[in-house]
Length: 259
Image (cartoon, rainbow, N blue to C red; front, side):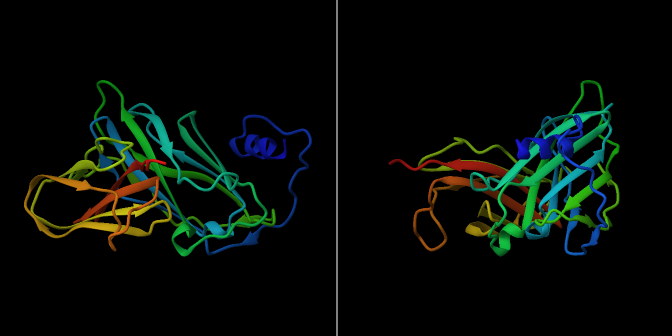
């Protein structure tokens, strides 16, 4: 019930009768940052990467973003796959805003260096008859520490134009989930130095599929579920990521090993 109460307060659906008002003085916290990645045009609309740095300092947060709801519809929000019982995450779109809520469920959470950044992916679908445009902007941010104290977190991130780049495109992996191997394509609009790799949910590099120059066009890549050292990667969620010309795009895949 306490977790549900906190979740309701974060998303402001209704007041929680049993939760007293927080009148404490906020504590300054400069170790938390919210950063937009490069928006990527997709077949349906646009994907916006969002990084929340300093997860080890966060007990709960609510982030609200203004977005052009006359052009786009929020289809989904991807959060990292933490261990069961670690975090509760919520998202919704209402009144021209995308609202994200993140609540730590445990009193203690051990994070590896790669997990100190929460990588979120916001999927926006372009409405019929609309053209890409507008901007995503932080409208409100609320943070509390693991000890429950409200945090004063400066927000330096400015509005993000949503025109998209379209220069670096990753297809969906097929099959997904997969047991032996999966294949995806990378499309470039110009010759570029490119890195293509597989990463786990903690952001650690699992395997490098390509590093070097590629000509413009579409290339196919296959991952057979093997780590860089030659051992088999365990079942789980992975991300295939490509970077070129200062742009990074990634998508999710699921590896299922047999018993």
